Image 1 (tube, helix red, strand yellow):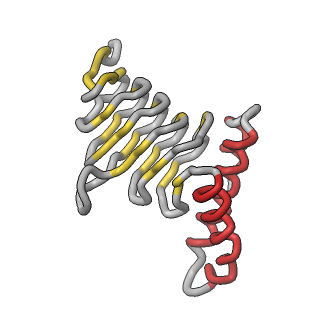
Image 2 (cartoon, one colour):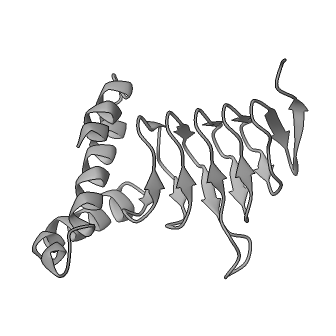
Image 3 (cartoon, helix red, strand yellow):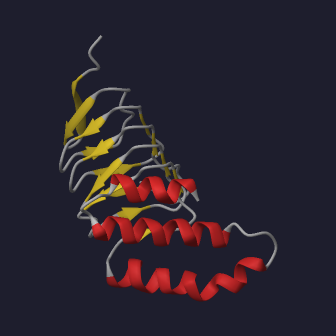
Length: 163
C-alpha cells in the first residue's frame, strides 16, 4: 500500500498517471489475494481492463512487476508485456512498447531510475541498467548498461556512464 502513495506523490500534476497507477496497484493487490478470494474483486479487475486498457489505450496488465514511484507521462499508447519487469523510480512516456520479439522469447527487464523517451520500443530478453536513458523513438534490442544513454534504430549507446 505504501507504493500506492509513493506513485501518487511522484505523479504530482499528472492526474492521468495518478489514476492509472492507483487503479493498477489496487488491481495488483486484488489479483494477489490467496485462493479464490480475488474473484470478489473481479468487477474492479474488469473495470480496469475496460477503462485503462480499452478506453485509455494503456496496456499495463496488473500482472506486470513494477517497482515503486513509477511515473507515467502522457501514457497513451503505452504497451507493456505482462512478464516485463520495471524497477523503482522509472519514467515511461507515450507510445512506449516493452515486449518480446517472438513468442516464447524473454522480455525486457528495466533497472531502477530508467527513463524511456516517447515512442521508444524495447524488445526481447534485454536488460536496461540502473540510471539508463532511452531516447525518443529508439528501438532497443540489445542490453543497455547502467548509466548509459541509448538512441537510434537500432539503438546504440551514444554516451556511457560517466566515472
